[in-house]
Image (cartoon, rainbow, N blue to C red; front, side):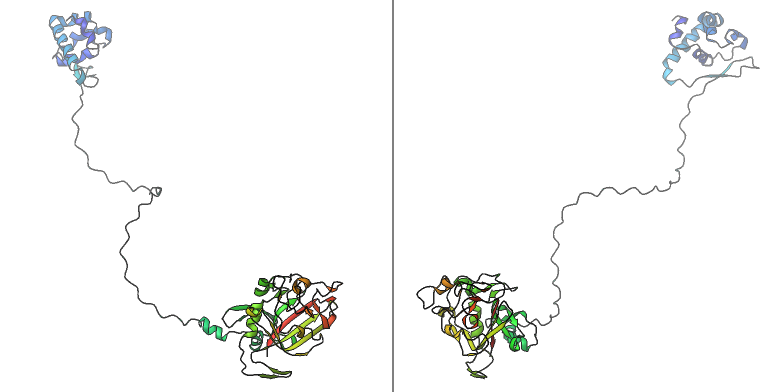
Length: 385
């Protein structure tokens, strides 16, 4: 290999590594005078070969080859030391040493701050049902309950008069119980003539139509706030129920049958004048007898007697003609009543507001203001004797 080929394998500075490797570090310093400057141009082949001679050139070539082979294991950059005050050249090369032993384990660092809680995970599946628990202890016996319906019915008030005797002195709507325990709301007059009256018919302002059919009169209709008919079934039940009295009762107006009710009719005209009529007994038969009127003796009153004419007469409506006239009196006089042939009173007629030209089709009471005057207020009420 030509000496000039060293450029392919080592730089001029790297050639200096060959001196100690080739044992040339002991050559007298003055023999290397041409290389003293340490410049790259001093390491040109012509200068190096002139210094080394044939033997030195051969050794230099071998050194270059060694550098090429071991290039991957080359130590870090070589440093030149001991040049001044010495007649010899000393070249030191440092190489990495072996790794030292591992040091002792350091102390644990302080705990870091607690992190922010993560989002809740999806709920898991429900687990299997647990075993059935033991039966609990038996509880204490409860307080005694309210009386049964039958016992309550036996002691519940059945009439407005009974409510009056129990201390209810204000007129108004109350609940009574019929013999079959059915509750019924009724208007009680606690002021008129000693009070205790159960009102079953009321006219006051013409707000309710009384020209109704049989079924409507049977069940009742109207409003608690104004006009109403309590219902033929209810009137029959109230007048037929057994009362506390036994045997005939001697009233100021004669004997009354046991379990009967007296009847009172109150009338008010549009001038504010009050009239009334009173009867010793009053009863309404059942539907099988067409709600026939069973009336006792007239016992007085400023309105006179305009109801005895209708005694023992069945009830009639526009769709059920039970009167003794050839025509339907209920249809002709536009009401529901105990018509005969036809009437001397018809308190369920049209509300004509005082005097009227039409004949006998208003809220009429013949012995009072005749057939051409329709009363402002009429009330029919009963009370146990």
